[in-house]
Image 1 (tube, rainbow, N blue to C red):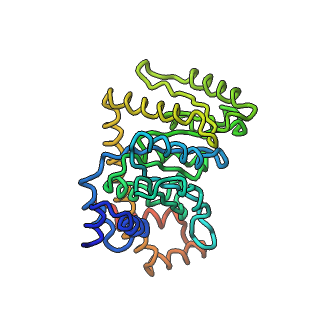
Image 2: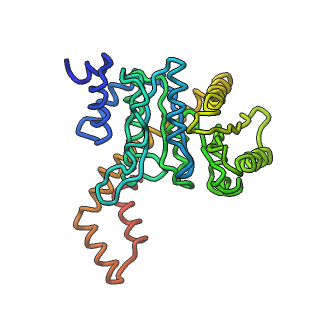
Image 3: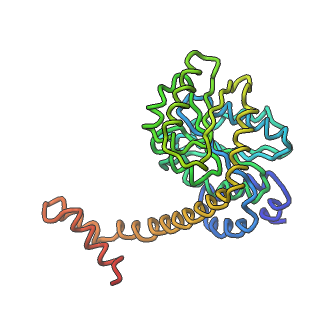
Amino acid sequence: MTVLERFRNGDVRALSRLVSFVEDQENGYRDLLGRLYASVGKSLRIGVTGPPGAGKSTLVNGLTHELLRENRRVGIIAVDPTSPFTGGALLGDRVRMNEFPADGRVYFRSMATRGATGGLAAATNNVAVVYDSFGFDVTLIETVGVGQVELDIINACDVVVVVMVPESGDAVQAMKAGVMEIADVFCVNKSDRPGAERIAHELRYALETRRQTEDAWKVPIVLTEGLSRKGVDQLLERINAFVAFMKARGRFEQHRRSQIADQIINVLRYRFQREFIDKIQSAEEFRNDLDRIFRGETDPYTVGDRLYRKYCDTH
């Protein structure tokens, strides 16, 4: 059998091969994703984000145990910072896979950001497509935790859990970081530490003062202790409640349609970058323009406008 046939028969080693193939963007990976896409749309994507040290990995472990109790298969993508020296992920051993059964019901992949902004690796969406096609009921995506530039997790997930800890600071800081807008569920982890109730109270106050429509989802705040898994079952309950709320109002499908539109734009943006920008940068004309700018004969704005008119303006 081919790797793809073994993949469709549930072979975890074939899954690993295809994940690597897609993540490394090997020749033909887009054609592969196109063949897999007909069988996607069933996996629920849950994003877990928040500042470094908030215990996101421990919560992902706890959520995985809860999902297994519900007889759901779980794929995990942990997006790690990239080593500036090796280009590899720094924290690839975060999820303790020896806690889970080795029967294929749980699969974990740590991915390096490779310079991508937004807390997500460039290939995260593509790997999530592979997971979905393989048959995982839930895909857990844990992001780097880089604060203000993490907002693109909305375009990758159905549900966003923002994790905070008593040491995170006040809710005003959270609002400045933009996480108030992306959270579907707030989780105050390490809630056995002093200050947990205070930050939960501040979050409630901040949420209550936001301008919302009458039919808007009321973002819950769940207190958890990741290591002991206390409150993790309640966290999953609130996640499931959010999904039910969105589906009942047709917003779940609407959000996914919006994600598909964004995915098309990203495909175009990527091809434009690779096939247009890279071509211009490697041209002798571009190097000559750099020399002219350096000599003070022109400027980047004039050159940029001229190149746009030459290559893009069809009118």
